[in-house]
Amino acid sequence: MLLRSTLFILIFLWLAGVFSELLLHVSNVFSFLRFFTGGFYSAVCHQNPSKVIEYGGFSTLVCARCLGIYFGALSAALLNLFRKINLPDVKLFYFASLIMFTDVVFVKFSVYSYNKNIAFLSGIFWGMILFAYISVGLSTLIHDLRTVQEK
Image 1 (spheres, rainbow, N blue to C red):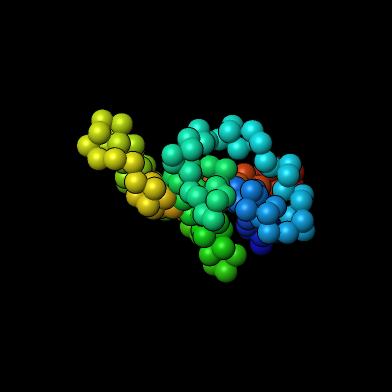
Image 2 (image 1 turned 90 degrees about the vertical axis):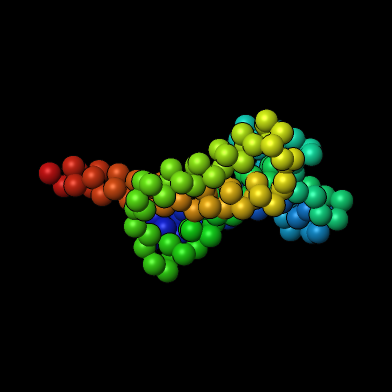
């Protein structure tokens, strides 16, 4: 349960950082988020201005797809607090990856224009599946390390 809680808190804080521009404007209570502003998120996202989510004159620090991935991971982490997530079939991971990859390719080759909603939704699905794999992998690693220590 400690691992599941820790993962949820870390993903929540990461996602809060994505909204730091808006949160800093709302209240100084969130001033600790200044650490995340600037180029911190540029290491994980291209931050193309035409692909970020904007609301009330403020924008997220990542594109719509990355935001979807983080929301998907947070949703899965929240569910994982109440019911332990099992490793999904690898076909589901491939399917989620295919959806996201297809969207990227279709936009790249002008089959249709970039759509923030489609990017966000494909990101959510992939983020949920990715979280399941990471969570199960970390649990297995911790279990294996404890087993080795006991011997």
